[in-house]
Image: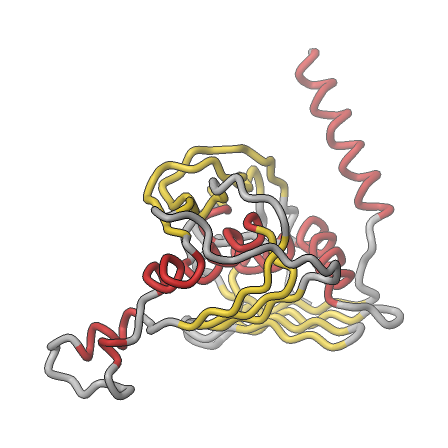
Length: 250
């Protein structure tokens, strides 16, 4: 009986939170007819479109987590693709759209999850031999980051944020273990691994001249920043899916 009462109280709390949560004015969800492989998220002020995305991808977008930070779910959780078009009553920025997407997932997919801290295989960002090669930025200011598959620049970036960015780039957990305080201005570029592999003797033409001489990301981190990635188990917050249902199309 205590368990039943606890579940009811928890459910009442969730429903109350959802009732007060920001929500889209209208939202359409349809099963995608496109083949897997291409998906995307497109936003404009007050508008969100998810193209050919799985529910797992929607959760990642809504909660700002990586694939390895989402666990569990039904067998269709990563396989079934959806087309979602949603609009707000008035203007809304990307942060507000994410909150509304969370409400949509709870309402239409009946999504429920809990958070756990789990040890997972990944990397720890640590100081290399010789110590840190960059100095903190003395001027205060907003944090900005721009990155793609083999480069990024940042202003006022902490080591914790650097580890999070590396986690996104590598698609592998990276935890800050430097113990270094402060914010830094950082600009890095490296050779994607597939370019180096082609230039290192596969018989295929190198996509860029002298690709094998361009440093890898671990090499750049050590040469320019005095940091290195050390393989180890790291603690990572994981969203564990408790429930998800296929929505009715509209």
